[in-house]
Image 1 (cartoon, rainbow, N blue to C red):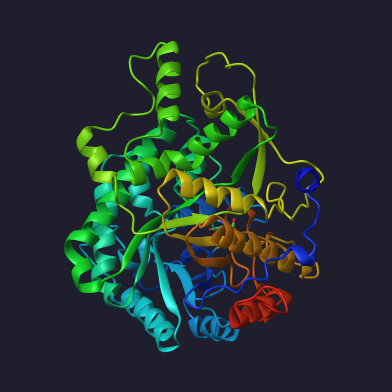
Image 2 (spheres, helix red, strand yellow; image 1 turned 45 degrees about the vertical axis):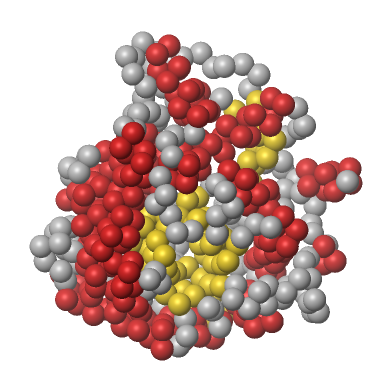
Length: 492
Ligand code: NOJ
């Protein structure tokens, strides 16, 4: 036991004999994921209007590491057949992709449904189904209509109605053929990235203030969409609707109660702030109490974390048909040992009051913060199981970024290690995971990193007009896993 703990802390590699030899169930869904802005291109074709990402890349090219943009990206708007070919070649059970709001509704509102966009997505969905691939459709993956951003985007209370109306159009246009819906992808990136630290459009820096207002509105937006499905579509369409939450796994750096509490606290501030209202009702207690106390100490008359009314708590609670989880890495967490003094403006770090780190011995990837920590996913899955009454979980994203020049063995190691720990969580801990999704089937526009971070099982040649797709080693590895449902040579 001591040796295992030491291995974990040192981040030593998983040996082959530590990889699970348990077969994945036949019905387990193995898939891959993409999103509209990152692959489609055709940013202004067929009446599509401007999203916040179109706006950012065109008005501030320096925002993107390599000054590129998603104007063409993988050109999937014109090359879906090529995408389909590589999905078939990999043998995936499902394909998770997103719909572009500004393509479907060029004004953002449902007053004018774009026929060309509907035709495009219907073709995608039909061809997937004809080939036995289950579509998993994300309604919102960060590409907000710019005209809504001009009205303050997610901090305008009307966002929940704008989004709900758009979701209704999606359900009514495509819902007969879609069994898995994701309302919103990675809300933490929307609110913390967009309104907290400001590293994503609209780049507003209002940590622990507008950031929390965004969370409040976003949860209402998700819940309205879920209720629309439940009330108007579920009985005919029989699908499942969930939100996809992202977090890293946060593990106490020691056995001390203080570090354990610190790990619990940051997990609540990152994922609990979204999951607790949806699965249990209301904000997580520790988040609610800490922010309220600190707000009063700052001289405010009410908490920076807007309280929910009882009606809102009841409306949001239960709006899940499964738990969508994106996870890439893990951190160790230490208590600060003191409560940071209040300051103006407030900070999220002060609200959370923890120190996180990744030991330098942990294997790194091409991005500084995405270290390879396969064992951490098992702890996170157990945390979710214990806090949210054993939900059914679909891992909607997990993947390995590289600079693209390396051999693909580390991506294979990463996927194998994470899948092994997921399998152990299912088998030994009774966590109900029913699907796993690699980000991504192919290299694509990695937001502020442009094309510098490559997540693809397939490489894309962004210098060729054809955007040629070419399999990496991990594509054949994953294909074999899907075929055999097994991570080693002989499964039991
Ligand atoms: C999170 C996001 O959902 C996706 O858009 C992004 O490209 C990947 N993870 C990798 O960073």
